[in-house]
Amino acid sequence: MSSQIEVSAHSSELRINVPWGHLAAKSWGLREGQLVLCLHGWLDNANSFNKLIPLLPQGYHYVALDFTGHGLSSHKPPGARYDFIDFVIDAYKALVALGREKVTVLGHSLGGLVGTLLASIYPEIIENVILLDTYGFYPQSSHIFISHFKDSILSYVCTDVAQVQKTYTPGDALQRLLIANKSLTVESVKILLQRGTKEMPDGLTFTRDPRICLMSMPPLTLELCCHMMKTIQANVLAIIASDGLMSEKENQFDPRDGTILLSRWQEYVVLPACGCEWKPFCALEQCGKCVWDYQ
Image (cartoon, rainbow, N blue to C red):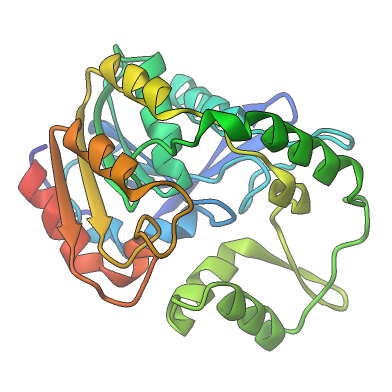
């Protein structure tokens, strides 16, 4: 990665047409520069990258996508459910619409999983992958597969997702997100809420589709994860926080699996504890420096 001109903190909006509506995205930098597709975490939105992108290498075209059902993107049709592969399709549709042959993917948490799967499926397109607080895959034991699918089906069938979404005062919406994400700062929550809420006659409502909460992750074994990693031709940098989403206290899978996954990437950096899981917000300088050093 090389530098040319300063990346402005100001962004422009993009809209990508899809059969169920549109995918929304934010764009920074040079339109003719190499594309860096930025993919946010679960229940977040493209504003996750607002503070980080101006600190990253210059001369690139940064595009932060809102996954379907998140941020300003359309929801899925009534009766449909969400699956992890939907977000991989979102990312691929964005790449096709933007028309680039070689792409860097910058993914936080869920967005990192999407990026690595995309890189394993389309190694000829994805040139670099930068992972923020994710190992790139989420291995699970094969003995939970049946219960995993059963729980996923029951949660969807037994939950009324057609109910009217609640409205909140701005202060209540802020507190709700702070309580759900205790490591986020007030400033970070306000940034997410700018894109994650909309005004209604009686208050604010969250823009994300509540059906996302019923989504199931792909039950991949460590063996399958390692096999998929072998198909990736991209250069991979994993930036992991010692107290982040992948820390032993936060995770449900064997930490030894994480060590195995990290050892198979070309480069990884473990950031010191800073008390915040959302590294695109709270470890800006450290993340930015890691990406600059990676250029």
